[in-house]
Image 1 (cartoon, one colour):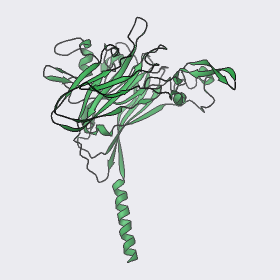
Image 2 (cartoon, helix red, strand yellow):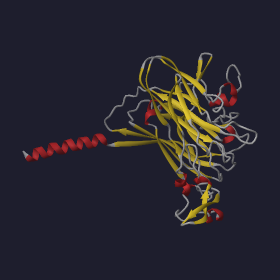
Image 3 (spheres, one colour):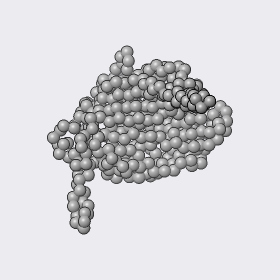
Image 4 (cartoon, one colour):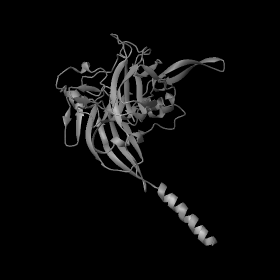
Length: 390
């Protein structure tokens, strides 16, 4: 009897263990893909389309049409091939529900031939009977200063802090995109963008990794709708600098009541001068149907934690006090706090509950009231993206 009880317990444990076994399946999207600024280099081949003078690469990939995946990650590895600067980057998907894409933006090939500035911030809009949905970001990242390329440069070696054993050879990020599983299937158009102005640029590896449970079927009835993306993906599109003048407003339509709606909101402020939006705290205000649903300051003060990825970062000295004596302390430009990002960091979306929403039209408003106005010598802009899941 004891042996029988032991056997039953063993079988139960074994069954539970098998149930939790995961099979990871990775789909390589880009492998050592070069992204660099090459004027007049826009081209298309059997696999990729290059736009924006080589700063944006598009590719159609095939994912399984039906799956029972329970988890998904977007994975990126990046190395500099000569670009020493920190720049914003994005791995994104073109929504299949969109009748137009960044290809139309790049070619200005909308039926009514309106200029790009007719669509402020590049938001969701209706054009005749067709919808445009902006790119939906799977992973936003900020390139570090010259990771992997400048490691052996004599100047960089001299500037390496004593607390760093060595400069890193590359940098990797991973973003949980499980909530986007409903749109990660079948044939999809994806892209990767780096806001580089260097003709040397970067090499990037991009993959989507799924975790498949052994004996589980997952319902994927969730809807994903991309609403706003102000990142300047397309040629002729500039960074969006109007948030300080008026809110950016877009809308979405629900065909039925939704029990729970979540807004995923990404925001990073940019402007390289010392008092620009990159280095000054600015409040972001998000409203739904004229009611504030989120009000916060995107800010990161842990940038020094990424120092080992930033060999080409400039270094200055600042006066500090040590044991009652003033000293000159070295600080790298990559160490300074910034508006929601650090050189070498990824930017994860802020998840905002919109609660239960009724059927019909709803209006989303994004406002950064203290954003600096562009002048002849100062240019500030915000890369803001928003999408809903319900």
